Amino acid sequence: MHMPKLVNNMTKKMRQGLWLLTLTTVCLAPVRASAWDINEVYRLALENDPVYQSELLRHEAVTLDPKIIRSERKGSMSLVGRLGHAMTDDTVMNNWEDHKDHILDIRVGAPIYDRLLRTRLRQAETSESASEILLRQSHQELILRVAERYLNVLAAQDRREVARVDIIAIRRQLDLTTGRLEVGLGTQADLFDARARLKQAEANAIQTDNALKNSISLLREMIGQPPKALIPLLNDAPLLSPDPESLDEWIDQAEANNLNVQMKSLDLRIAKYEIQKLKDGTFPTMSIGGNRSTSVGGINDYTKDSASIYLQVNMPLFTGGLSVRSDQAGILYNRALEELDLARINARSEATLTYLDITSNISQAEALSEAITAGESALAAKQEGYEAGLTTNIDVLDAQRSLSQSRTNYLNSRYNYIISLLELEQAIGDLDENDIQLVNGWLDQDA
Image (tube, rainbow, N blue to C red; front, side, top):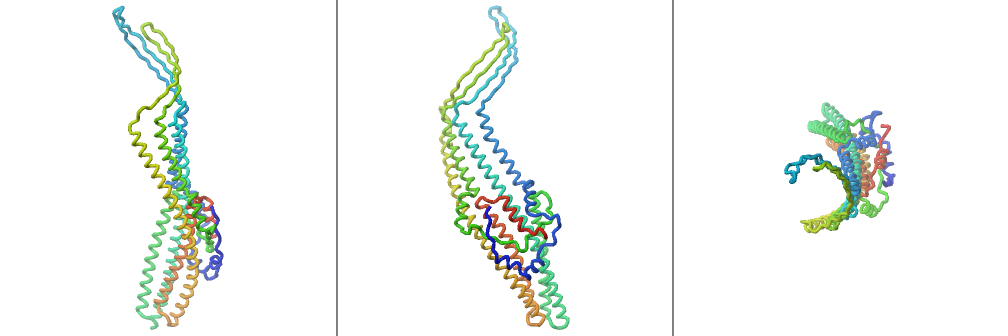
């Protein structure tokens, strides 16, 4: 994995006293000592995720194909036995003779020269290599899904907490509006608007609670059990920019190391072997064999032993449909070429988009951090102005809503940043357990 660079100015802003107080207000409820970090969730998913377990079994089956073909090169042995009874017409004695007819035959054989068998083995070994890459892809997708679903739960908890804080703030404003109305300083319009905002906030809280339940359910599907409390991100979790900083370097790495590109390259070799198999099927094969047999029976009840060894050559003269199958194999080879080109294009696109997403999320988080600080000041000023009769109740509620949106968007930008960072590692084929450990280090273990 690549270790990105730390953006120091963002960390400094997050350490400001007022901002820390805001984060304390909207952060998760206290986490139990038994709470899970992302490393624990990853470990459980590795053992229980049905998608990944299915891929493991598929790969295990594919690895047996080369062994099966190699075993064919060892030859074969068979034992044929027969216990019978026969009737023979004796023309001299002019009668039928009844006698035994028993045979025991042992046969062995092994290929000496078989081009098709050799090509089949090479194709199976290439398929095994492709299967290993597919397994690595599945592992990377598992890591990404673990991160997404873990962070989705944290994001849903954040949105629910922001909604709760929003309700508290609106209720306070509603109480203040009601009190001012009682002494003749407010209007009915202010009261009605505050009540409408409160109902909307309560409806939003219900939606966020349902979204949290859904996020927990999706995480449970991966780990096979209800998740415990999850450890949240640090309030001052760093935002890291890609290292190296050059986008072109990331694109070059993606073209060379992206797992889908590697897999499509192997698919091209497999398609080429399929063409070779059809050619090899027209070549002669040679095998060696032998047999040892014993027969008991006949009119005189004799015992006969025999043994033989032979060299057998099989020369194909005509195979129906060979020309059509060759044309089909050529078409599939050209298709594999196109898919390889498409995989390279997609790898470049993925590297570019995820790189830009990271830089965008960093800039967005920085801007939203400042927006929150400015929003807090604006809300405080409007509350003071409302108490002094200089601003309206609607102004205060709008400021409160704007601040809540900024808080939610900031928290989302942090989670989106982490996912983009992992996706960039995936684009260059470098996503692994070390990246899980990196994210795990950004969690607040003392929460």
